[in-house]
Amino acid sequence: MNFSKLPLSKAMLDTLEKLGYLSMTPIQAESIPHIIAAKDILAQAKTGSGKTAAFGIGVLHRLDVKNFRVQSLVLCPTRELADQVAKELRKIAKFQHNVKILTLCGGESFGKQFSSLSHNAHIVVGTPGRVLKHLNKGSLELTNMQTLVLDEADRMLDMGFFEEVEAIINFTPKSRQTLLFSATYEESVLEISKRVQHEPLHIETHIDESPNDIEEIFIKSDNKEESVVKVLSLYKPQNVIVFTNTKLAAAELAQSLQTRGIDALAIHGDLEQYERNDVLVQFANGSCPILVATDVAARGLDIKELSMVLNFDMAHTKETYTHRIGRTGRAGAQGIAITLYEQSESLKVEEYQNDERSFKRDEELEGNSTFTLAPKNVTLVIEGGKKDKLRAGDILGALTGTGVVSGSSVGKIDIYDKQSYVAIKSEDIEKALTHLKRNKIKNKNFSIWAL
Ligand code: ADP
Ligand code: MG
Image (cartoon, rainbow, N blue to C red; front, side):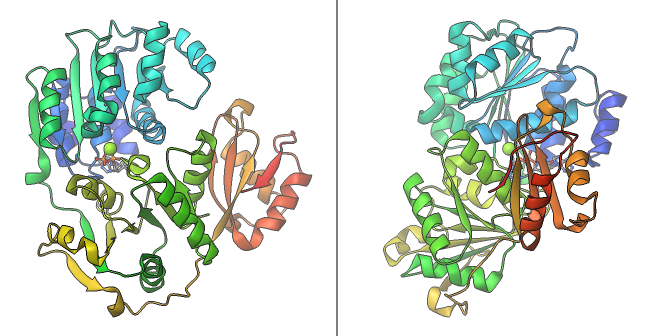
């Protein structure tokens, strides 16, 4: 299972080692040799099993850096996932200089993307709508494209997306390699996949991969909101993703949990891009313990150390259930997945009965329904980022240099193009905010506020 078994360059192997990727996951071991051999692949492997690096290593190995054309296109269902995939590819791409990876997603300035494209890119990662728009306007050209990847492929080929994906495919050469990756496939999707692939190799690693370590509990409840609070008081998870079936339900549940003193934020497709970013950053840096999400918004997201998934609404299909609970117990970690159901859903729940799952009634839960949950951090936003040459060290230095704020009060620092986010221990937020507002960072004054 060692990466050195693969015909990869020494530089690539060194980079993987630096990333802490010491041995291949089963999907990586089984798919990378075929990707390198230019085969079409339909790959199925469990959630959190390193599918991104599987296609990423393959695609980057095949890349010709001297050819300034788009050689690979990776399509994802959401911008957040596209960003995450691009980040992973950039980490792996460090093994050689000048690999240009560009994201093309909706909610961003079209003009800016237009000019980035005019400077050429080797790999484009994007969402279908925006990629198609660039193809139609002629700002993106795929005639030299080698590899098309559909991440979360079952989602990309289902009715919601297929029309756009097919239109994109019509801009690509017939000779292309097409790679499909997901944890689940429904029969109907397998049929459609035949239309976009050429004699694909089916790789299913779930036979030889050990199942994720996720404790699954189903709880029958007459009052789901009360049950959520009880569950939180009982298990005291660090952070939780709560799933609802609709955007409206997500927004409403986050709101009513907040009223109960449980700090929660919602993420769904109706939020503006900057709002979604603010929410995800706060969730990832410990400034908000509960994220209420819809299925599409959370597909594929790799959130480090997520302790619990809570299904407030039952998933409509088993595939959706798999993707939801797969946000926890990733890359060998442990997780808990709790599903709430009402009396009227008892029949549907029977489909989920198996030896590993336990079933309880809300009355049996000993939790406390007046429990409250405050975040341990608050996020500071600095109106300056990579474009201003800001680095994490500059921000940390400005905060702690004079000893007003101690280093242990400062958490994760995320630097984006024009903004940076800093997690600060809740009790020190006023101090940090006042201090930063009075002092310059890198000899400049930036607007600063707390989220
Ligand atoms: P999937 O797409 O299969 O759900 P991801 O590609 O998001 O999973 O990977 C899950 C996590 O595993 C990521 O944090 C990634 O950095 C990590 N990972 C990937 N490959 C390896 C490896 N070979 N060794 C250790 N960690 C890995
Ligand atoms: Mg993935």
